[in-house]
Length: 288
Ligand code: MN
Ligand code: MN
Ligand code: MN
Image (cartoon, rainbow, N blue to C red):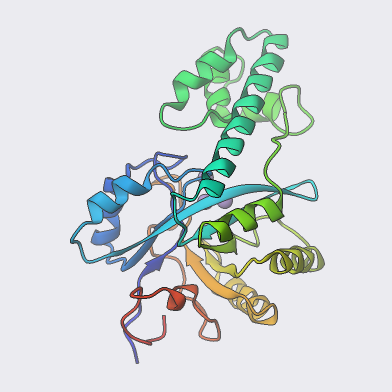
């Protein structure tokens, strides 16, 4: 029997919507005995250099990652890029396009909120955002502070969700563009948290079929607070599609996430772990 390996291939720092800096995240990972850690900020690789610096000569393997937002058949899908080279020009171009789309959308939300009687919402939301790209949570905070809603939930319900006056869709990358950019950056594309989209099984199969045809290689079989039963179902799907299995907490910070770094369920035994492909990522063949 091998020793259970602590692996987390999905988490966020304050370079996207996580609470911790990369070095604070690293400290937490070491404390929890995580052996392989991938930082996967939303459409950003900005935290990777700090994470590598913090991990220097520490007993942990760092994998460069990213979580790319994708528009697929009118759904927002998240695709992880694991073991990528952040210096890839193709990937940097994609990141720039995504940032532009985010900014454009935020400006449009600001315009809509002006029509709802809130002046300079975009500028105010930018102040809220700090390190992060401006997004709906920041507008929600502004709406609460300006007395347009009693709490964040109400701000979303009244203004920011689909069908409400300040709802704007984001023009995210296509599935193909995201997958091909990850491949161009030398990485593996992985469908993140497959149950979070609340797809029917046939829709999920359709996604995996297209994903695989484009060059996608992995499925996040274990994600966050997913149950062991759900993980087994995803493992089944993963082997049917001959995909590699990934595992991540999707940790954003204490209080924001139910599962701490590396504390998600173990990968079911019938999976091929994606990290076994990475040289030096594991030193033994022990089951995870
Ligand atoms: Mn997030
Ligand atoms: Mn996600
Ligand atoms: Mn995530």
